[in-house]
Length: 90
Image: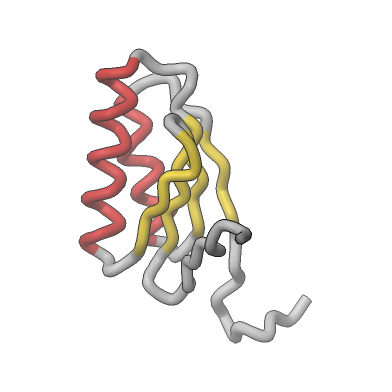
């Protein structure tokens, strides 16, 4: 099916990592211009923090953005994706 985005097909990849070693694979997807959702609830707190820090550094290196959705869930987007959080309702 042809994409209105030419050769780039938007994609969201969801990760539930259990080990820090998965961080490199997550960054690989970001470098392929995919949006990544990471829920680190299955990891120890310290390992989850290391993983999120590593992925945040990776997304920063490609001029992307990161947003914390809750204590253990984060979304990371490549540079061509606009990430905006709606303001809280009045």
